[in-house]
Length: 94
Image 1 (cartoon, helix red, strand yellow):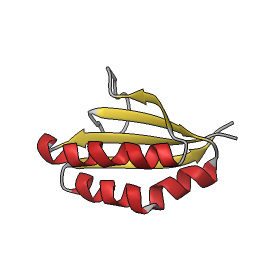
Image 2 (image 1 turned 180 degrees about the vertical axis):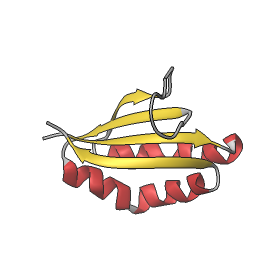
Image 3 (image 1 turned 30 degrees about the horizontal axis):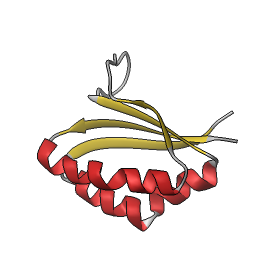
């Protein structure tokens, strides 16, 4: 059963964020992640407002979790932490 990451992101330092953008796709690819939505127009009707929204599909929950804790993603996350505010949720699909 597929699983997903949904990330809500507001970039605060675009130059620093480029480091995350350079590293994160390697982690997603290693664990079979496929972008279903990334950026684009959005509307926030409830809750905190973020500028970008990303939906990534993984083959299963184990792969989604493994990606997040992988050294590859943790290196990318270190680049993102001082460059953006983010909320990431990993969840099982139907």
